[in-house]
Image 1: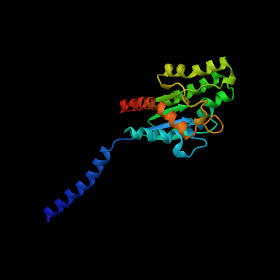
Image 2: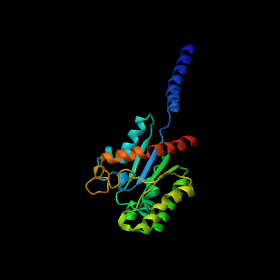
Image 3: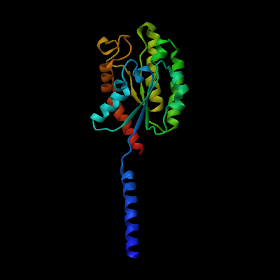
Image 4: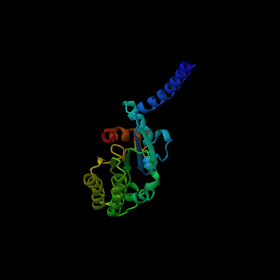
Length: 215
């Protein structure tokens, strides 16, 4: 009788330990938060064609598992992004892609104000110990050369100061290309998003390498 009880206890222990061992052995999938405006949110596109979804699929095609969270809000300026940052970043975030500033330029917001808001966003994200990829933006030509030069300088300046991964222009290869844009001439269509993803992918892999180095 004692032997039978011992065998039952041992079997029960095995049933408990095996699932726990399997859970511990499963690798953690990094969570990248794509924090931006309508270019991130995917205005005018189905969600599976938006930047976060296409980026996640592209990484998977290259053998990299990562979850890309769509934290884009159409119309957001850098200041509006700062206002919602605290509740927009999930607790399980591993890294952040910051894509903001396009609406600032369209509204003619002084570059100094945009830079100040981005600085605060970066400092808050870094305070959580999360690696950052900063996606740059260009001002529209009608804003003039002086404004455009001051605006363009925001992103490399911040990347150098805070040690961020930098992708100089989020719409590289897409801006002003009608075949890659929706009817408004501003937002990328599905093929345009694919071009963005292809261009930024090496920088995202650099970001993920930073995440891995922290594990």
